Length: 372
Image 1 (tube, rainbow, N blue to C red):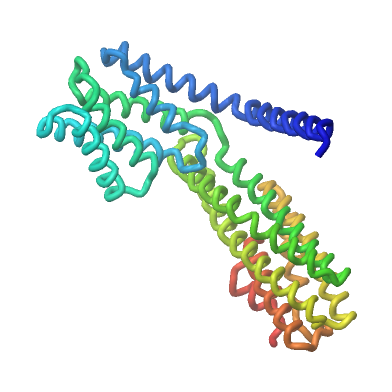
Image 2: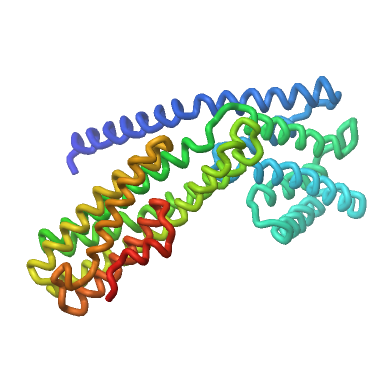
């Protein structure tokens, strides 16, 4: 590659990274302010109200408990508090039996990690327990005794929990946005499948499969976010009235996960059907049209789920999908060969998943499909 081309590529890369970094920083302004207030507030409370000297663990536990992780926040708070407390107990006990030193510190960390993994699978819990037990062995005992550090950790966790419950942050907003994004991706998968049929191009079907597979990590992250949203709705007095709605979104996300998995199976089978020329021209055209219409219905479904006040839009999207489901029979689509019929059966499974995403009862959704 010529030197000038490398320079252009490097500048372009740096500009792209700078844009992404600025966007992340802008989106993190409120969380950063919240973390700062909680960390300093917890430190001040432990120092001025409780009289602890240098209560760094109050500030650090607040920062860790809030953080930027997608894990449920209540779990993080409990992991930080319990991890600190148990870690100090373990460290103080071993310090009493073994004394202090390098080999004692190594033994304490080793045993603490094993104990933490035995008690809980959380990474934060393991880190906190091991760190606190190590610090107890290596650092001098504070003026108030070893358990002042565990009290500081609980103070930091309480500040983080109070901020989570009292700062106005609608737990419905992020899940709604996530649902709309994921349904948009599923719509693109269906459109690529329709395009693969229209142009008899198995490569496009593989692209649809790759797109569908790439969404799984995002779905897993969204499920974590929904667990956090359910916690907030259950515990916060401001949003407790929305608990049922948030739990409903959690069920919808589960069905959407199934729908995305069904789309992967459909796209993989579609590539084989195209390579083996298993569909007639008429069958190809009919199935491509149904997939394209289904993609449009999914787009409308995503918009309806993102707007809780648009009950009529949700009903329209559900009726649209239901109308498409009634036509999913190989003979209606003029598909005769066995491989093509198997493709229609896979599409029927996906359609049932989509109808459940649209909040239709599973039995009613299956009843819409024509008898085989």
